[in-house]
Image: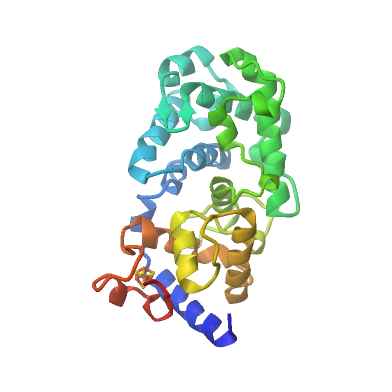
Length: 293
Ligand code: SF4
């Protein structure tokens, strides 16, 4: 991308950012669930649960997040409910849960694994050590896989290797070393690390700077990144997340993923139709730099 094009794309993204109604859009985003809590330990646990289910349509996964959090709220909140997990009550409340790749057993396994991490490290942040997003996510996944393997027998999971864990649980525990974009984990990390500038993210984890974050690449972000010339890739991967973030870092070296929420919600809200549209495009701040047809 030429310096001139970069400057124009940045101007478009700044305009999109300025135009985004963060408060209104937060209600349509899984991060909204995290803001129901004020204790950082409750927030990091609620956030992990919310981010894990954040695939598919918001209207489909939001009731699932609510159902898991409501169970934990009845037990005193995410931290208390997980620390003193009543497995029988969890089985009664969540055992029949089904959401796309995930089943109730996956949720019970997650709650047990989260409990194991809390008992060993005191918090998810303490388990998620590292000096890069790759390391932090990798160590968190490793800890949650380890505790799922040791605790799985309590919910009928007989697994001695990660590959033997239930498919739905493995879907949640995608390691960045696999080359995946790890969209849900990069989003979770954004929530935990970025400051609360727009009333979205929390800034409660301190092991990384916002400059070290990677953009969560979902279908909406990837499509618009294609339109803007930030990547030619048609499917997301870790390499593509690095590529897009690399361009964003040239626009904002301190806080490159600042544009993520606005980009994602341009698609989630339906404002962008995914192709040139005679009504939507003239009103879009990216119109002058968008290569969509
Ligand atoms: S296709 Fe239209 S609405 Fe979508 S990003 Fe491009 S200009 Fe904006």
